[in-house]
Length: 339
Image: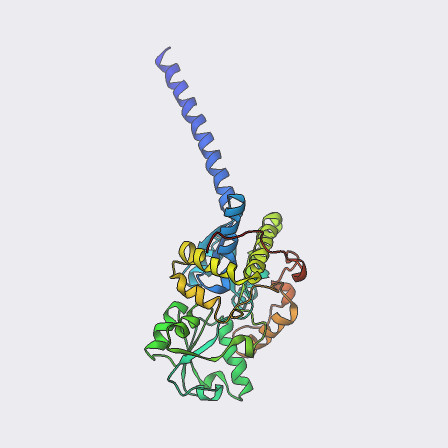
């Protein structure tokens, strides 16, 4: 065989190899590009629980969970298209919709959870005692900011009567311990950590002052809803089944505390174990279908508090067509090996 023919044959082999490699990589990317963003908080617990149970039952997951450490990174990952779905603060999702971002809330992450904590030795026993005090919230668009606004209104006070500071939730326990702030509120498990370690006391439990409270939701890009409805439906169904599984019995919650802490959250399981059991209804994962009255209250409060403009409404930012009726959701048929 002449040198020219040998060179041509080698080029064909290389080209064929590159083509197959390109196809393989594209197929792999296509199967793994349904990334779902989450933070290591109990409001997002159903995300890792769904991923874990899918892998145990089917040997693979239907999506790729991506952990972030803070809201700015999580939001930017969604805006850049890196994540096509994400767990996100409800007011933040609404604000993005007001800004023209193609985002739709398809399900809730939880109900209740996120107590308002003060130091055990403080003289703060009612909302009025917060006047002039420093209160830490996760950010401008956190519903936990609205908790304070809602309670201040009841007491005839305004947000200007307290000093609101924004702080990453993981930093809040240390801030309360050192008394650099007078009160904190965020998604669990960080408020619960202060209570577990003996220096935090609940000023009020969110479930007592705002029954059915919603902080975080599952939101999806409109393009994904348009072109990949089956995958979105699988995701929502999995989240719904995980929520029901978590609320079925304490054994499931304790199992989740172990595998989520070690495999997804990089936390000591002692913390999630405490938060998911003390009290057992601190955070709820049932009744997660988005409803208009819940979001209209958030809209109203957020507009009054200067957080939202009030230009986006329920039908603009919610697509509830994927959400199963709460009374037909069946828990995952998974029995954990955890003892």
